[in-house]
Image: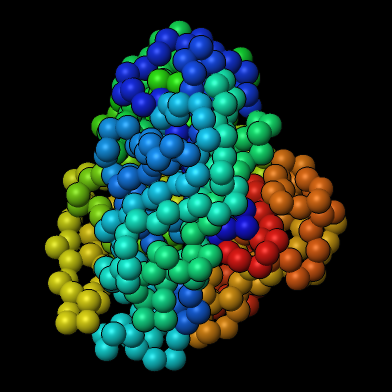
Length: 516
């Protein structure tokens, strides 16, 4: 999602596309196939934006990943060769599970990663236009050039590594956007410390999140297919929790909630050979034949009613980050114009987290710039946008589809900044304009971060708030709530709320070396 502004995870275990019929296992354990002479390997990644712009979206395709053995043999970690699209900016304090592959036991000297098709959407918070067409205060899209080879080979520590039969191994690849994205917004994948790698702890590594469509169900397990064409057997146990399933799907939160055709997100806590993963949590995303999209709110506006009050129609500008069905009319990086239906349902994707008192997300009045939300699209209202072609300098405005939302669900936002004003329950987080899209006019934005007993702390000396110190640079994954009686703001406005929003922290991750 991590000293990293984001990390994605790629446990590399099962080279076959078929599933094995493994039984359920205890969540948190890493499974392996000791009889095969192979060991599980896992991979993760991260980002960091440059000064002068707020990086709203950085998509890149991982087209190849391989380990090179001491004998010179290359072992592919993407068995079916299908590129995997990664939105690096959405993983500041989270991880995303990508693939599995069996790796023969032995010593490996390096990891090679090949990338393609970078996509960059930025908010220009500098004092000058970019590329002669991206004006100050505007959201712009660019397909950046790659300054050097698209393949990066990592051979420094922790290499050489040893994969042992039956022993899981996790590798975390840190993707530092602040180093990789150059001052001219080109991409230099080979920049010093632009991409680094470390080994995950051997005890109960966290393999991240995996989203896809349920294609089959069975005893203690189900089959999940991702949008990039990989299928996984997902094992569950009595310890697996099931979150956000509507009453129409099931009355009790069990495996019976999971039905063919649903889109779900799996928190992967264990990995095995032949495409089998262990789930600690399964979260409902959307029903079969439904259309949802996830994005970051860039602007909120409310029209006046016929009586002249401000209780008319609410609309939002939404930067599209996630589209579980990959609907071509809702392109990632697009800036959708969304009308909130008057009877739209509002909810929180709590993922089993208990919200503290004093926060709410029950109506359009609770919408705020910077929130991440999943909205349910009314299919008949969807109007696609062809978008604008790029100009001579490569810049253009993102495509702007429009639709009506019949439901809005609050998701965890990703925020990075500096800690101050510690209290017994949280702290103030100050984010520079480079790291938070609702920083305006090159001024810092602040948020009040509230932690609970359920908050996870990563990289600190203690797994609680006592390990956090003033001036720490951290990434927070949490639900952003608008302050009471706040005035909504958009990225085209110079006005911001005087009272900071509250972020209920699910995860707080320390950047111990100062990198994002």
